[in-house]
Image (cartoon, rainbow, N blue to C red; front, top):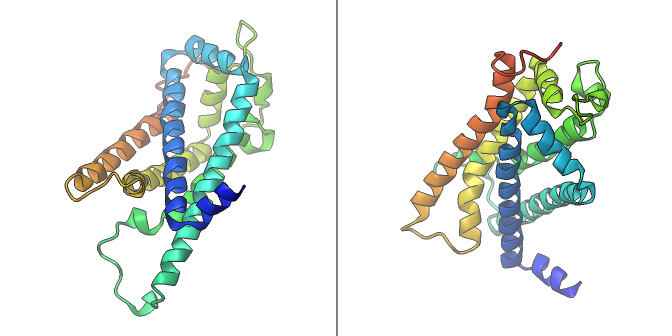
Length: 236
């Protein structure tokens, strides 16, 4: 316990915790996308993937709880570091010129981080816990089964994203998530002491490219559903 307390009480320790938690979240975002993109391979592929995960329910729920805890640690460290920075520079910025060197993403990290946190909670309630009133379809996602008796994740995603309000909400939240990542990627390297003047711009540009690619990947699913590119065979 003393070790944890010492880490949290140290500015360097908080930066490391924020960077490591950010790395874990980045890995989850990439892995989750790869799983979701299986919707383009058809119902058999993604339903089999879902069945495999369900067969390891203990591990799966541990991962979900770990995800929420990691986001909580990430936001907590961000708030502590932000408070520390403000205390070190007690200047009234209301009457000062707007900062030009900081990107919009970097100046809204805490706000976008909190929005992403609540989006993850909504996403878990929507497609994992499958709370009826959240999906806005009037259907019980628990009852969706394919011909093999597996949970029909394919139909659930198709019907879920056919609602324009749900899809638009996802797109907005994903945009904020990827905006958050564009700055967070470079900040992670800086906190770990792996960013310098030589490689700094390259890392920042890589963060932007990765953020854009992740947004395209995630956004492709609700957009493909709304456009009827996938899921036309699923009954409404």
